[in-house]
Image 1: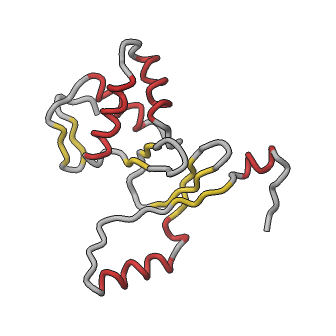
Image 2: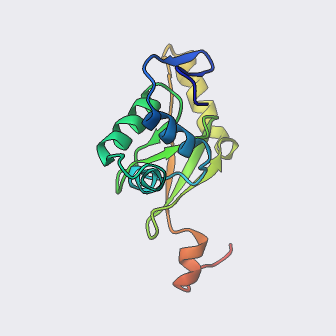
Length: 147
């Protein structure tokens, strides 16, 4: 998607730079919910002169424009997501990884949102992050138990 103007689904970023293209390209190939620092490390391999601030600014700009999603984790660094369809996340408190959780996991939440809309609320968006320990970390600590 390296155009003079980045376009996606009718959204346009009027000013395009090689650095912005690089950050977007790295995000489009990444489904592991990276932090800004993780994207910065990958960007430095492709462009040793790119600054941390440039990567952070471009990630935030791309998120504000709706090209990627910014996931704010209260207990840690923000993560970024290239999957824009509705889904939720699980955050591992040990390894700081984020995992996708299908949105159909919470039918009562969908019903609550519909009820709010019926009462006149304008629900623009919502997010849900489950916190805990992922199976890999639990197994490493001998805590994994299937229920």
